[in-house]
Length: 123
Image (cartoon, rainbow, N blue to C red; front, side, top):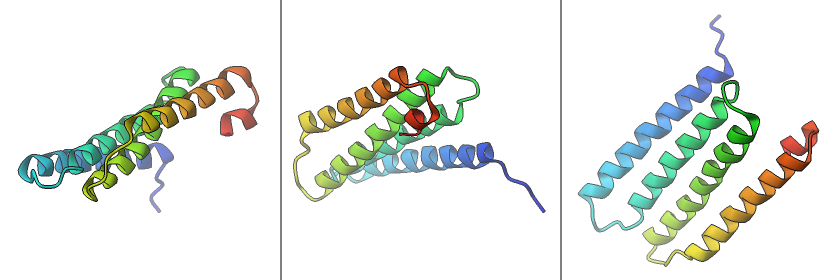
């Protein structure tokens, strides 16, 4: 039986997201009538950076991979939401988007820096 570790699965996910982001970016260059595809491509690439940082936790400081890695992943989720809004012809509320990402990152950093227990890191 083949044993697959979590690092192999995470590396596969990062490679998959990178390739999907490159394909979406190429598609945004070909089809100019779909305005949200470029933003979705940027969100997928941002998510792959976040997953890479989270997967590199044994090589990085905990403050870096938890705050920055999850920050990139939060950003990718909200950029995907903005890209979908653009696909439907709606505007993207950038100040609200940046406020939500900033608050989520600040809360994550505050919980990490003030709490030393495992429960605060899980939250």
